[in-house]
Length: 217
Image (cartoon, rainbow, N blue to C red):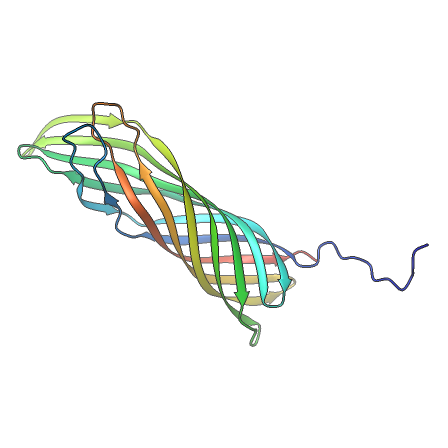
């Protein structure tokens, strides 16, 4: 028989949903030699900033401890560099985008007037893609040739460190404002056996994000 003194289990208690948007500023994306013999690495590499969006589901295990799983996508950012050559000016251009799948843990550092600072870390996988890859060759100011290079998606181990504050809005909602450092691994084009490729090492990003969390009651 059911003991009427037993407390009912609240299935939703502790679970939350989250959604985030962010500004992404990539660190220096260093190109390395990638191609047939005689290939040289790019110089003067540049990558533009971009935006990200994502979401996830998490659980509050204790007042100071929670975890979530998240998926975030960073929109294509323009990447370019110059390949040294004694005669021609060779410029490689591509769009870099990345999707991460992370398991994150956080420590909430206490709450004051509804505001909770936190620190956290995450590990997971990054899918990094170079798309719209092309190579432009000029002789001084005269156009010589244009070559499209094959795209490629590289899968890497990724990790993150984050810190921020969350403010209680009531009705189960919180606004979350934070900073996240992301290490995304490598990204490279597909080699075709003839053309020199692009390969960037140790891609990292500084992300400033704002989002909402909703506690499922």
